[in-house]
Amino acid sequence: MKGAAFPRTLSEIGYAVQTGLCSQRRGQSTSPLVLFASVEVAPFSKVGGLGDVAGSLPVALAGTGVKIVVVTPWHGELDARAGVVERTGFSVTVPGLAGPETFQVWRAELGNGVPVLFLANPNLFGAPFVYLEERDRERFTAFSRAVVELMPVLSADVLHANDWHTCPALIWHRQLRYRSRALYRQRSVLTIHNLAHQGITGAGYARALGLEVDEFLEEERARYPNTINLLARGILAADAITTVSPRYAEEIQTPAFGEGLDRLLRQRSDRLFGILNGIDTVWYNPATDPALPGHYSADERGGKALCKAALQRELGLVEAAERPLVGIVSRLDRQKGIDLVIAAVEGLIDLGVQLVVLGTGEAGLEKQLAEVSRRFPQAVASVLRFDPLLARRIYAGSDIFLMPSRFEPCGIGQLIALRYGSVPVVYQTGGLADTVQEWDPSTETGNGFLFADHTAEALLAAVRRAVGVYRRLTEWERLVANAMRSDVSWARSALEYVRVYEVILGMATGEWAPSPPAGH
Ligand code: GLC
Image 1 (cartoon, rainbow, N blue to C red):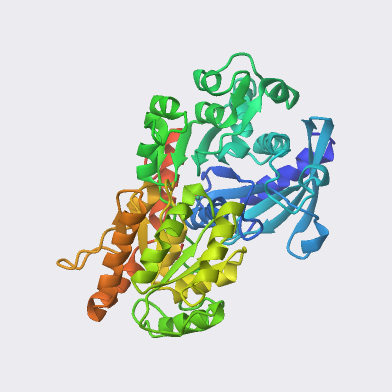
Image 2 (image 1 turned 135 degrees about the vertical axis):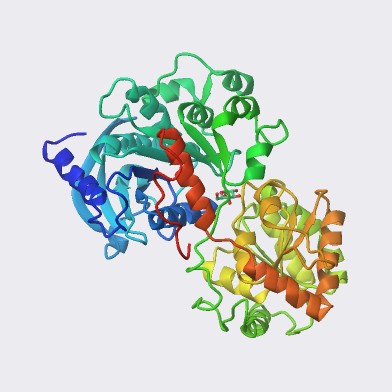
């Protein structure tokens, strides 16, 4: 940190939050403050589910009375969106690879009065992309360093980091806590959204980035010699680790899903919590969503048929109300099991369904999908772009939502699909298994269909079960009602995060969370 005026004025931001001046709902005066750090925060930036969670969980937490400030890089040029953000006039300077890096601090509001601080630095974050691969370690390490600088200035109590990108912040925070009066009471949480990305960094480069490297972890030596693993070190540095579903929390402690870190995660299992993601049910609401041609709710579902017909038209598919329309909105990669869909496509067509796939990703998969829709133009539509509005029209217009992910920490798509009454058919893994229950006509329970073998045959069998029910109208109506009534909000999960904060701060249960959040 540099400049005499800067700490005082940044403290004012902290003060404003502490005293509820940021129009954040006033919590108890003793309520601790969380600094929530993520390199994606929707709606400002979003590549995947991380952005959705970072944009909605803090809002739900604020609804419980938690004081929370979100911090994220500003990606791209700032002028472009100048109306949305306001300059604070403050800056943070941290050591960088080629000398000091200065971040200008800008500010906006998320919802429920939650402030978002944007750290802008054109050298590191001037490109309008969240991820650049090549320089990501350098960029995210400098950002993380700045986040740690903000902790004492904001008088924060909890540093909440997300994925490997902000793990350097956990590592420094842990080191500095032993040396600094201002930090020693602070605690930290790491949320793992995807264990597959770990931030593996050559030791020499890591030192140049300012990280201490004296010895290597077993996991680091086992993978690539002379590298450090930022996620592994974050797991060790954090006071608590959470991941985005209970089942994934179990899975990652096994070699099959542990991505080489299962031993470490087992070692920390007493501090590892699985908390399901939710979605912002005010934003994602088929009764009001402005992207939809028709509106509907769990009780009054007429508008859904309109959405389906409009979608079939928009995609150039045969406009047939009786044909089940299967939707996929996904990153197109191996994790998401898109290869399985391609293998099953003819079987799907034989079942009489139409298929729409929206997403971008691996070139090979994009090419195969384009070919499939060329071969079956009336039954398969592949839209290979990022289009959040079309995505919502697909959730609303489809009957069945397919998610055959090989592994899925939580998954957001099936939650939105449930909310929009598109019945999920999913592989039984991670958060998919935690949020979708197989339909049982005898008890009229369940909200979707699952398959337990990751094969095209098992996928087809599950879609066949779904199509079977689709053809029995009253049964299908009950199932859709169940789907739409599933609780996909943040209400319960936000309180579970509060509980984690209480645990690491040594507080009693309920000391912190005055009220369950409404509507999120
Ligand atoms: C990652 C995971 C996904 C999860 C999301 C948000 O994108 O792959 O399963 O829902 O993060 O936590």
